[in-house]
Structure formats: C-alpha cells, structure tokens
Image 1 (tube, helix red, strand yellow):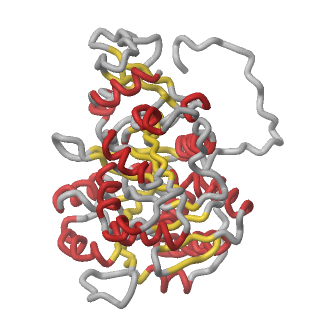
Image 2 (cartoon, rainbow, N blue to C red):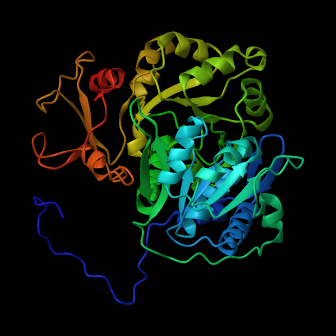
Image 3 (cartoon, helix red, strand yellow):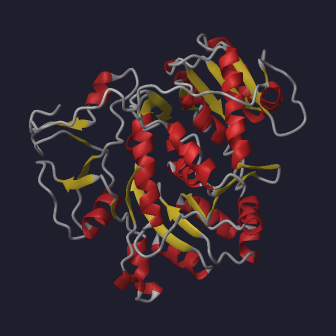
Length: 446
C-alpha cells in the first residue's frame, strides 16, 4: 500500500460470498451469452459461431493439458492474425498458463533470444514459420512440444510435432471446466524491440487485461459523438495480434459478441476485399498500412464509406487523413505503448466539433487525443514540472493507470527505470521514452 493512502473502514468479505476474480474467461463468456450465433471469420477459409468458438477453446484447453501444459508454463504462438490466435488469446491464459505471442518480424537471433528468455515450453507455429523453428530447434532447450498450425495441404515435416492443430482439436473432448485462480496471475507476454540491446519482455495479468478491456470497450462505444465499436459493428484487426494483443480490441470484440474478421497475413488487396465482402465497419492500423490499402488496386476501386479506423503507432499526417476522409473513411487516432497494454488516449470529438466542416475536424482527429478513463497522464519537463498545454511545448510523458506493466521480465533494474519517485508527484509514475509528436498533441488537447 502506498505510504500516502488513507486508512479507512474497509468492507469485510462475507465468508460465504463468491470471491469473483477478474479473469479473462469472464470476457469470453459474456460474448457467448450476448451473441451465440454471431460469426468469427478467418479470411476466405473458415467461419463459425461464438458457440463454436467456446467449444474450440475448450477443445484447445484439453489438447494443451494432455500435452502437458500446466499453470505457470509459457506457451509460444507464431501465427498471423487468425481465429487460432483468438482461441489462444483465451485458452492459454484461462488454463493459468502464459501466452507468449512471438514477434515474427524480429530477426532470427532475436526470436531465439525471446523464446529462451521467456522460457517457452510449448510452441504453436504456423507453416510459414516452421523453417524458422527448424533452424532454431537445437537452440531452444526449454521447448518440450510443438503443434503445427496449417491453412492447407500438409507441409514437409521438418521438426518433431505433437500434431496438427485442427486434427488435435477434432480429436479432443469438447468440454473443459476452467478453474478460478488469482486475478493477478500472469496472462500474456510479448517483447518490445526498442532501439538498443535485446528485446524486453512486457507482461500483463488477468486483472490488468480485464480492466483495460472494460475501459477500452466503454471508450470505443462512447468516443465523443462517434461510437467506433458497438455490438452491430463488424471488426477486422489490421495490427498484428503478436504485439500488444492487437491493441486489446479482440478482447473487447469478444466480450461484446461482435462479428470478427481475421485476415491472416496482411495483403492490401485482400484486406480491402474482406472489408467489402464481410461488411467490416471498424479496424485499427498504422498509417503506412492505411496508405498501402488506399494505393492498392482494390483500394482504388472500392467504396470505403463507413469504415471507421483508429490509427496509431506513428503520427498520422494531415494529408493522409484528408485522403482517407475523401474516400469515406472516418479517421480517429489514439496513443499508447507496449508497456501500457496499450491504450492511453484517443480522439475525442465533441458535439460542437462534429458540427464543423471536416476540414476543421481533421487537425484534431489526427491528434493523440485525450486520456481515457482511469488514465492519469501529464507531460513534464526535465524538472518534473507540467509543460504548457499550448500544442508546441515538448516534454516527457508520465502516466499511471491500473494496466501498466510492472516491469520487464527477468530484468528488475531496467523495469525499475520505468518508474519515477516522489520528485514529480506524490506517487510513482511510469515514464515513457520521449515521443515529441505525442507530447505536443496531447498537451494541446488536455
């Protein structure tokens, strides 16, 4: 407990009451109750209902426990954005194990480092990455078993396998009872590459992910006067699920029972076709991917009206925002980082602003926005003093929220460097690296 917290009269818990831990399984079960017949779509290959999603997650839990996965084990996933990744987002943490979403864009040496550093014991790997695992297999001493993820015909078996994902699910029992456990249990792990040194492991608990999901859900549904994601929407991620849980939106979409479309490996023409064919209404991506879709053959000839898009990862230029808006895309921006799960701020469009012409809206739509609920955020100078909110002053972001990572895996000294002491505020705040564009944008809008 922080030294400055008041001593109050605390409500005792009734011995007979159910201790309700905030676990990821709660998010899954709510979506199944809301929309049992809603669709989960994987590219042009597969579609099934939320009822089937729950059954497949239970089958996967049986597959993993039969293989030997135990609470506390780390399970690595190397896949594109797919229904399998969504199933792993739930099944692995719901077993009390830890899901390590491997960044497949890292170098071979960095992948080896992260898998060993994470002490991965089990690996689920797409055919596209089997050659990588074959190359590394002798250098992964903690790995005990590998499951193949396939989209088609059998590939040449280059490593010893426990089996193929779909075949193993089909053979597994369709029921599994997920036990309760401490909500502060580690749920997910991924690595942020940074600019120097080895990638750093960022981790989150069930409690943190549930709280982030609930606040993000409310934020996207009540984003000023323009709701971005509600139960009638169709969601397609265009940011990798291996990084920051695809900005946490798959958890939000599942909790609401929303139709979800997973595109597999990104290809601009395919993304635009899926938007058109599946009726996608909400996506999130980085500006470079937005530009690639607009430049693609399908993008040039498809009406993009009604596509709400949340941009982040780098600054969205006014010219690209104007181009997207002219094609019918509703542009919004947000800010976050790996260590913050990630969402910290988002575009807020007031009624007065929405009454203005789009030309006047866009300069504010491309801002990093304002902090979301439960996020305290400031921009300070080198002395810890808050900088003027003038849209020009630069500083360092300091933030506190209930879903911030508590450190870097196995690196306590570097993790401790995330936190400021009492010099700036009466309590500790984690501090990001310097993001000049975000500092300017948030300062001007807070």
